Image (spheres, rainbow, N blue to C red):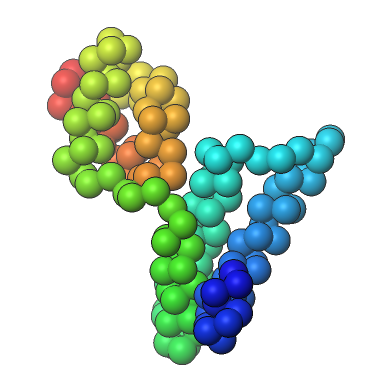
Length: 142
């Protein structure tokens, strides 16, 4: 944040301030204040990036490309602080391993398989993409 302040990078500075605020809000939410662990901070960052992406799509559909670009710029700043996303091949391999380990078969085990996969891919893949791969693997294996 100090570097962004010195270089007068308003987008990075504003985005980092918003993200830090979101992290602080998460820390004080609930019954008692607590310090977030790394995995919880990644969840907050992932959520913030997703919000920016969805807002950009809404602005684009609403005919406001300038605001869409601003949201995408903020998303790019947030992504710098997230772990490297998994490729589709890596994700598919991971899902296959989890399905084999858990002995999941058929679409009826979708919830159980997702519950087992999510902790392994947290912050590195979107839930919608993971769900699609899990569904595909379970239906092809049945």
